[in-house]
Image 1 (cartoon, rainbow, N blue to C red):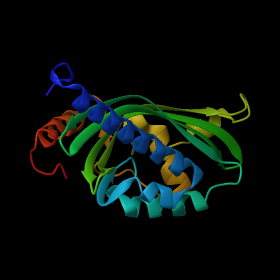
Image 2 (cartoon, rainbow, N blue to C red):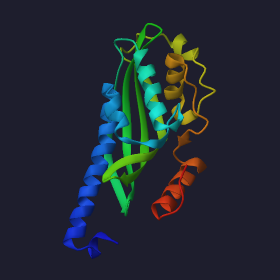
Image 3 (cartoon, rainbow, N blue to C red):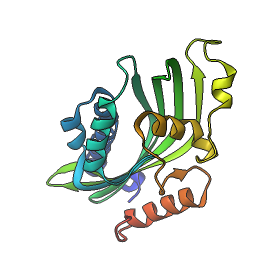
Image 4 (cartoon, rainbow, N blue to C red):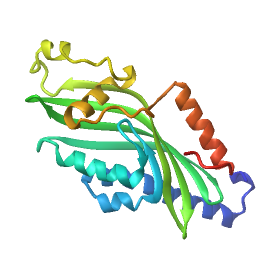
Length: 217
């Protein structure tokens, strides 16, 4: 049913659902940045799945891995996820929320301070259970990244020349290099890059699921 054919009560119900869905999606990234692991778990169903650059599997296992990863960071490291332009499609107790995400990170590596940025889209599948919307599946669709010395001229050119970026997807080479260097996490075999067949198939499967089809995973 389109918004134009809804009565006022149905329209208000849909608005309330969309607000809750967006709030849960946005809160999940704040919880990830601040290390609120219990809050992050509360955003996902127990059987939820997630596919990101370094992990593909159960979302609660991803959260534990993220906790361990952040525990090994340099005290001067920091990160913030900035999300925007959410679009929510509803169908009964199912919903899809897709939005843009930019990750800003400050990292100390080999005694040098770097700034990393990663641009992506997040495709969240939501299911309402016991009256609450939670994420059932999250897929990151990566677009591009970059890496810069925090202080221009501080890092010698030889450092960059010595980086082996060949094992990583070109669109996400600095992001993946950083992950493996700092935490020993190689790229997931299921990583999804914008503009590829994997990205197209992901979005097609999501629409089939939203229309009432079987599980995406």
